Length: 383
Image (cartoon, rainbow, N blue to C red; front, side, top):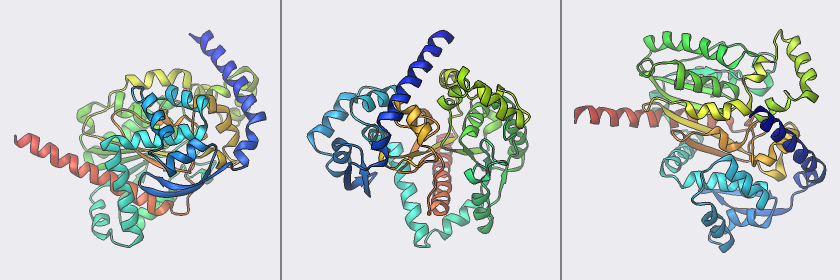
């Protein structure tokens, strides 16, 4: 299997280099202007082909209908999106992911609820909801390098300051910023075991690498009865199945660079190996999450004509796997039990002037789903 995967990585690297040299211009020079709707919200942008334009301007167009008809029986997976990318374009695959996810009633309800709270917050009409959120204890689990690279927002400092301003209790679990996935998972387990004895309603919020750490905690390490007070988990740009970027830096040509960088942090390649896409994409599907936990996947879906320089090389490298956020394929950020909230145009770092309002809206959405689930459980227990 390792030999096959090595061959796969080499092929991926070759294809990525071709894209880097011959397609980079397309990602910096907008092709088609489009003004339409997606997720029931207006969108004005540039896209990389005519079909992508039609997908937001005229969803009833024959070519759009044929696209969805062709793939309707295939799973919303990285393989499916990669097929669409190679047949059409990156933006077509991105819009397909967002629209196909939105077709599911649970996702539509969650996405619409998120947008509802954004509007309420913008109009200062969410006072009661914010008061109710004070009944929840928000637990943040930081991402990779959250101390050394605070500019990524992986430390959740901004979100915690915002919650503090509203009197909403919260804390940050201090994991090892360059720690191996399993080691950090053990740290999270110990802290959650303590917190679950102190708080009745807990909402977890993870970011990037900590998404995988949280998944292992909830799906493998904690017993279901230990998670009773964990009501919701919001996974922001979760690298749930590892990242192809980690495998790239584990290849022979990049191995020395990786070792040198990690050596300056007092670490070895173990951290990168624990994020391997090769290994994690298979093991993740073996995790079983408690049914009472409401899982929300917050996915940034950048468009090919507007890729920021910060993620451009990584985005191009992973394009053979279909649309991605600059760190991992979009479809690998979600699971069957989770609900999807998409942000078209944003990438892995969610650099948005309205991010404060959106962060609160996301928390309120998680609370609302948790409340509804509690009521459902209460009715079932009476019956």
